[in-house]
Structure formats: structure tokens, C-alpha cells
Length: 79
Image 1 (cartoon, rainbow, N blue to C red):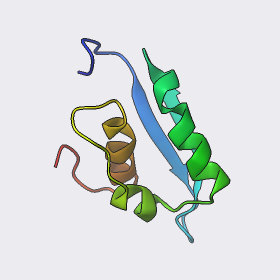
Image 2 (image 1 turned 90 degrees about the vertical axis):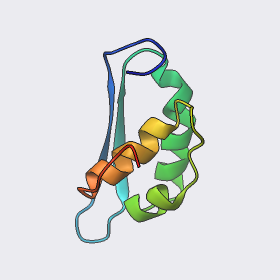
Image 3 (image 1 turned 180 degrees about the horizontal axis):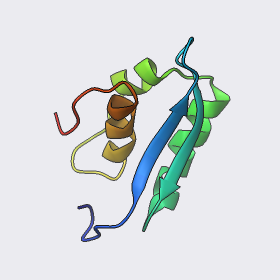
């Protein structure tokens, strides 16, 4: 649940061998607030590990990107 909404998700698609982010799916209310981070990640050829190490302030919508990065590695979210 985020911003009073229960529908939506963030999914990161990454290349398996090099861990490079290939795409980001942003679905739900206020998803447009996360587009800039996704574009930068793609433009800079960021790895999922680098996204995990990026600070995502709490409580913000950007936390969803950090949690999706953890999920892409099969790690626990809501740390």
C-alpha cells in the first residue's frame, strides 16, 4: 500500500549475466513520478546492484524502485 493506493507495481527487467537494467515496468497511480529514475538507470547502463546501493528515501514513492531492485535479486524487501 502506497499513497492510499493498493494497485500497482514496479518491476525491473535485467540482463542475467551482467546484471544491467534493460527495462523498468511502472504500473499504477503516480507511476510517472518514478519515470526519471528509470530513464537515468537505462541511459547510464546501471546494474541492479547499483540500484540497490542507491539511496531511496523513506517514505517516498522512489522506495518502490529500490524494493524492485531487491526483488530482482531475490532479496528481501521492506528492509
